[in-house]
Image (cartoon, rainbow, N blue to C red; front, side, top):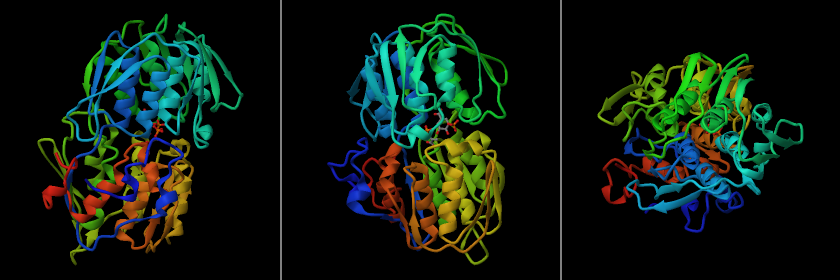
Length: 471
Ligand SMILES: O=C(O)C1=C[C@@H](OP(=O)(O)O)[C@@H](O)[C@H](O)C1
Ligand SMILES: C=C(OP(=O)(O)O)C(=O)O
């Protein structure tokens, strides 16, 4: 077993009050002196795990989730569904990162409070489920969660016939007074600030009395692959979502089928590890890469070559190899990119851009100001603190090459800000990431996997230490 202050046995990554940096101080990001070569496997996808949990709770029988993600976000979803009346049992699994889950739907009852933590999937996917439950369900979360937009969820539910008591701020906390059913019907919403407003409604819509005819009307619709993912997981459970045009979805009332589902590895969480290949001029292989997927992390295969990397694929192994300049040093080229479909990849992409030798402009990501933190402001602030030259645009960032130096990198309770700091630390000595434990939101194993990556403890170099890390 690998050990670090962040994997001490008593550390509970799901407990917001158990903050690892309080014990361990800032995390000194490792700066290797030679190219990294590693092979590793990653835990399950947050987006798939939390969708399948919701669908399993609404399904017509018992479902099994194989190799689900065990992290703060998925734990919050499990606890929330349990408190609404779903039985979720741990069963022995074949995955390297924790047990499987057996999910038995139950009659849904409110009279509970749901802690959303900082999980967008919990705060946007569960209110429609709570409206299908009998009794009041109060939603609240971290301080940062109270700043995330929820108005579209609240107004949608009211328009579909549910009773929601909120403070009129369009934010947590609020209470859904469930009556056991939702009328459903025709609805127009503005999902410009998050695709999760659409996904949350689609996931439950087959259980609405009249189904749903949903139209998005707004200046943009971000993260389309995540809506595709929602449609795909519904299809697998027998629910057809018709989409007669972009921004309109029809769901007829029907049951949702129970299923045994294998959860794919989280490809967005592959981003920092694959970025390490570019930053150090080495090569990193991720095992278990699905042959076809709706995960937007799959776009890394096309995005990383824009920075100069080479990507190869052998079976389910995807390998990224960094470019080298004429002196044999790592070479990263700047890019111009509209990243509107893959906003959750932005922190890793921007970290790479900050280490590139030519300028980059990343646009189409105004909505990531509403993620765990205002990611445009946070990235610009933290990179500039290290000597960078990043300019905030309304919907993106402009990044000019600049020599970076060490310093404290703040995480803003944002797992992807923390991992972006780790990426920069690979090239810049003396980067200390505050609250690295926030990576537990989707990847509690981050520090150990990163240490193994840097120390060469993965990929067969030191096979006896690869417990749970390699395929
Ligand atoms: O539905 C999902 O699982 C997600 C949708 C996206 O949200 P936004 O549309 O708010 O970007 C993504 O960024 C988030 O990490 C997960
Ligand atoms: C935006 C993200 O999370 P959430 O599901 O909380 O929206 C993310 O993981 O990058």
